[in-house]
Amino acid sequence: MAEHSKIEWTDATWNPVRGCTKISPGCAHCYAERFAERFRGVVGHPFEFGFDLQLVPHKLEEPLRWRSPKRIFVNSMSDLFHEDVPDDYIAEIADVMGRADWHTYQVLTKRSSRMRDLLKTRLRFAAAKPHIWWGVSAEDKRYGLPRISHLRTAPAAVRFLSIEPLLEDLGVIDLTGIHWVIVGGESGFGARPMLRQWVVSIRRQCRQNGIPFFFKQWGGFPKSKAGRVLDGRTYDEMPSRNDCDRLVQIAVGD
Ligand code: SF4
Figure 1 (cartoon, rainbow, N blue to C red):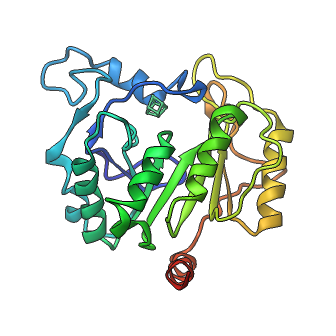
Figure 2 (figure 1 turned 180 degrees about the vertical axis):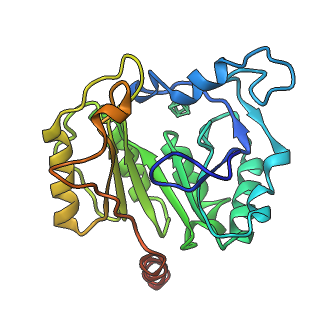
């Protein structure tokens, strides 16, 4: 969709699927829905059908045309593992990620059990590639912690968490097998608050486990007002390509 992105932890977004449906409290103020619905009924616009789920096959090969290496957020305007996206289509997307391997892909879902199941079967060929990172969103204990468990049992070489919008203290998180953690507060009108101690607890657990910690934003409205400084500094940590190659060797060795 966009060769450049304003999202702090990625370079570009790629949307071979558009639209989604809400699944948990983290979806309440979904930015993608808000954006897409503005264009419902605008004939010829990519979001002519608002946030209704649409496959967009003409976008499938887009990463192959981007020659310089990028971090690419896959389906920033949807959820790749939504129940209405066929297995075959997801496999086609994974095939493109495999072929355009000069990029790094960040696949993020709230449909974590389907992702886990497909990584064990149809997507097995893509699960252990160092340039494809598989992640889940975790906004609270009830919905988020089970997703982390699903991710942990998926045969992915590189696993990450997007803890955004962080809606409550997550307590002690089992970070075994997790390689990157992003934390952020909700932004936009009506944003729910995020307390500092919830963030600090996650940062401490990342430090204890040697996991890169990325603090995206405090959130609020406008989000630029609160910024993204935590205790006097920004946190932009993420795994390096070398780290990921090593993780794959470990996974293969397993
Ligand atoms: S899963 Fe993501 S894209 Fe889908 S409604 Fe929820 S927040 Fe929006």
